[in-house]
Image (cartoon, rainbow, N blue to C red; front, side, top):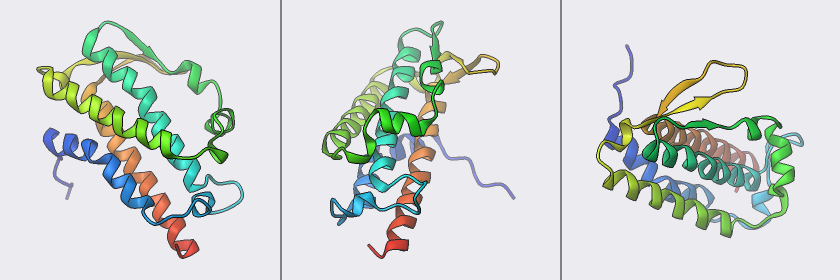
Length: 168
């Protein structure tokens, strides 16, 4: 038996609620707690949060491109050229505070939700997506939004696991 499909409205509501969900996952953590991780070669809570915010910020451009120019080509070749751990180091994930990143996350989510509410047929709009060593494909705004709902869910589960493992 397959799970029932989630409606567009439900996905959009989950997307809009992302900052609140992340805030809840981080509630009560001290600055020191943010540096907890499952192990030496794993990201800390702090690094996970910066990764989530940067991913949302990068993919925001894909959404805005699709909303404005469906014939454009969106590429993450510049990003996929390096492993994510290197970006984490390049962008100082391990020792930056979270305040500005969380503010950016809230603002980006509000901005995208506002656009989607005001542009007719926004979720169905699409853009060409270039993927390293794969065929180009079309990706819809809804696909990107749904991807980020799932991405946040996965990382919130990681944060919860870290908290549980460390008793915080």
